[in-house]
Image (cartoon, rainbow, N blue to C red; front, side, top):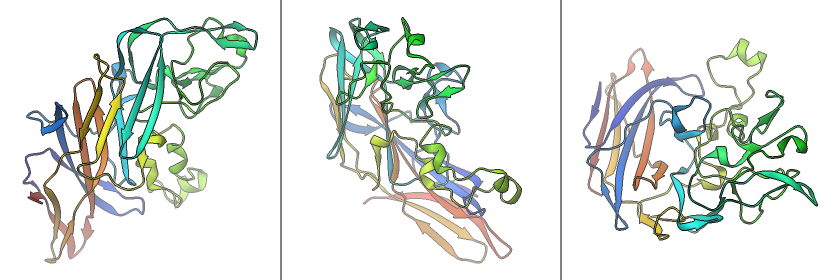
Length: 330
């Protein structure tokens, strides 16, 4: 039996952990609305998502809202969803995301194409713009030659080709690292972004472990022996934090408001959440979950905080009978 005694959405998910144990994962999500720099709990919270939601609902598009379902994560993912915005037409906007002492910077350009230049095939000038989505389709990446050549870190981007000349007059990446601007087709930078990355993209897929024939014969559907929990972390590696973020951590984002101001807030103070599993033997197991996912939607001024804990289902005399999600004041 699953009991949620909090006012926030919670879900119990039966699954198998990386060692092959049957477990039940309790997932809790708190949704806040940012108003004048303060976070208040939303009257209509965001759902706990069982699967990824892509931009434009296109199956091959990049992820807009990632699935909330997994057994565990390392540290905290920070994901920023929304648009770069400027008060007036401009050729480029700087987007800066500051979480605590860490700052991640992106440069978002207006539409631009590849052209011939003195240095070969180069990126042409940008057309002034005021708004652009922060999605990986606008960053370096993509595929060519009917998928024979793929940028594994961002298969949906642009800039990949068998020959540089193939890129002439085609869209060039619009999101790059201001410390290493993308200016020519011969460059192969790390794709820039702040959204969630898919499970089959690098570096997530490498953390899945060795999915070879031996694994298929000896362990499937259990994960490989060299599975790494970082596979479940969906944030761009620049926005993955080794230690879980805590309430009162300040987040500030520049370049996402129409007025040119800074979108800023502190993670809200939360009740002390208590996940309790009761077993048929009379034993009990308690977990105090930490925030493992922070999703900031700058378009709607909402922030989602997700927490989880896994409980062994057990067997014979030690079977999980009740899973309770509760909270009390800190």
